[in-house]
Length: 170
Image (cartoon, rainbow, N blue to C red; front, side):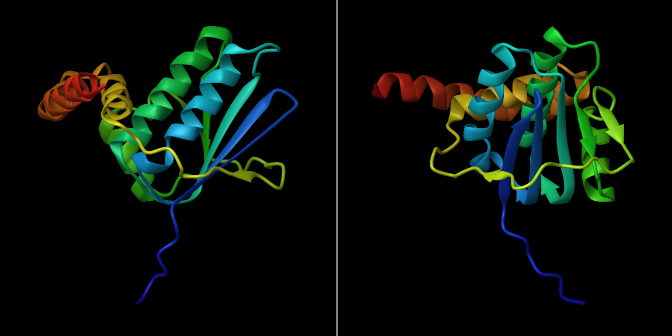
């Protein structure tokens, strides 16, 4: 049976001090930089964010960079909140990935559908994910377990070299 491939996209909206993010398709590092800067900036601003929801019901796959970004969102959110971010609408593939890497134990996995405000803003994919961006996301994952440390150590070394080379070019 043929399944249509859904285009990779991230959507966001904030209302009533709640951030709503929807991931669609195969979410990779390339769609993450704008989301990271928007969410991190908002988490540092006043008034504080009361809740952060990520809807994965249309997410067919997520790469490790996106999972590292989720960990980063949760870390920042917990600085100002007494509960973790909430992931909703998780399919089997994404749940398996989140459990394997250790992200599932950090966040709230909501079975109940959360009503998202519409329309959500589609984030552009103008800014590419550089080596420093991908490195930071993977360092977040490496902090979760020794297994992740081993799994991503070679990648970390390659990314650190790339970051150093980017600095040399500037």
